Length: 368
Ligand SMILES: NC(=O)c1ccc[n+]([C@@H]2O[C@H](COP(=O)([O-])OP(=O)(O)OC[C@H]3O[C@@H](n4cnc5c(N)ncnc54)[C@H](OP(=O)(O)O)[C@@H]3O)[C@@H](O)[C@H]2O)c1
Image (tube, rainbow, N blue to C red; front, side, top):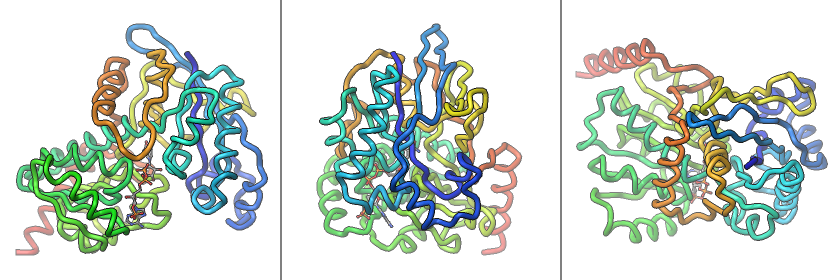
């Protein structure tokens, strides 16, 4: 079974990566062009092959809006471009479609799109949640964080991804700080989960105040701005970023050599995956990720195609943890693995981890 995945540029760098002619055009002109540009099939994905010989192929179809346009333009106009993208995928033979980045955030997180789509839909958030929590815990292990006594901070805690991450992180730590801007929603969410969480929680709308409290930070927000001030991070902290566009700035890496930042939602795809530009056959599309890897939300869509699951899967903001566990296990059986650690377009090698740990020890020693 074939798949489609709706993509959109999450930054000006993304636009230029696909269309070098856009260099120097400036954001207002690029946004204007995108407003009127129709959706189009951008990438043909081939070579996805499981260890037991199952294969799938698919297309990334571009719904050409920037993140701010996805959130700011009239909802129906945005839905139309996403549905146009899905129709292109369905015409190419896709029988399931994933909603990338803000195409899965806009409005009710996929529910309305699914009602109007000719093929089943998933946001891909279930595998993103599983991969994100695993990445955070892997980072904690690498940095020797004392997990049972640690405080984790989830920024975007009331969101589709963040709320499920809170539940999955809670059994590992002593305390979770829930962060978002809307205090009423934070209070409601905290009340709704307090009884079933094995650790204590607190709520916070001030990102800086929250970050100062945690050894583990996970971001899953729809912010289009950098959220973390490097000076707020504890020595030796671990930051796992799921947000796209990025909400953790490169300043964290340059100003805080003692902090481990990792992009949490990337998976290694089984087989010999190839991402080829539709308009220029033979030329690869730069996904901005390590070779052979894909975002976890793309991977969820591929796994459902490999499993011939012609059904809506992850939709809306209330995530079913049963589905998170199911897709994690289906992905593992299909040969998908957590990608190696990476951030700011660079791999995080064992040597880099050793250097980060050494910098943390040095700072700790200097602080006493
Ligand atoms: N890596 C991957 O494979 C992958 C896959 C899917 C999605 N994503 C990304 O994950 C992110 C979250 O997606 P989602 O579906 O969970 O979105 P969502 O349901 O809309 O949740 C967003 C959360 O972020 C909070 N938030 C937004 N702006 C904030 C700010 N400036 N400061 C603090 N909190 C803020 C929101 O609460 P308030 O509005 O109250 O602040 C909410 O809790 C998005 O960036 C999406 O593109 C990544």
